[in-house]
Image (tube, rainbow, N blue to C red; front, side, top):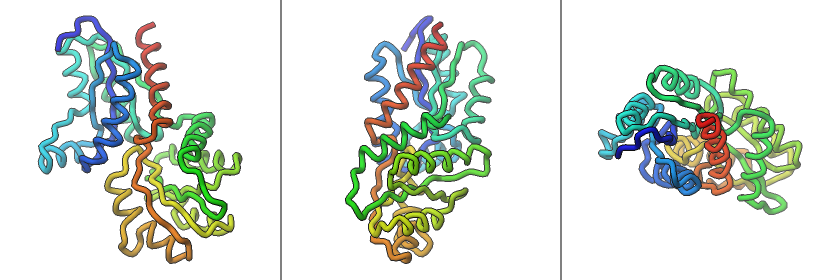
Length: 262
């Protein structure tokens, strides 16, 4: 397509190797953005080269890197682009995304913020999650985040503070950072809850959600919760499947569009 002088939107995700999660979470959010901004073409890019290669080799699904997508947009005549990551926080992947955008000449670009960039965002995300998962009196949420060595890992603690401040029975643990999953289990046990829903605190319910969280093997979040005496059951639903959370991304896109078109 040729879009001389136009503005377009690039939705940039880490990606997933699971086509079902791609459709439900990534494509679903892209459709919500496209519906809200019908005059703006929506393009897709993944930041993970490993995921891109896996999808191509295993499933025949081709996805651009951020650099490739920007070059494709230029070839299509796009001159202004609102780049919106679906990333939860501003860690390593977000920094790589910014580098890729800054390294592309010939485009006027504005990059939106990740889903959680401040305390107000923590409040909005916690509220959206709890509204979608009404709980029984003895029930709580155990939320599995990815975690990171990056300083942005503090977001998980800030988000936990938002849950606590509002009296929400949501407890966060991470796969590769702090707080750990056993930290979350201890906090849940202290709350007197005996049942828990395990939810991925991730944009997609892919590899980590299906294995690290919901797997039956020793060491999974599910196995650890049950070993602690918690009646736990997993819910394989990524953040990108929630209409309320998609709306938060739409607001990010709107801000990026205002910036790039001013």
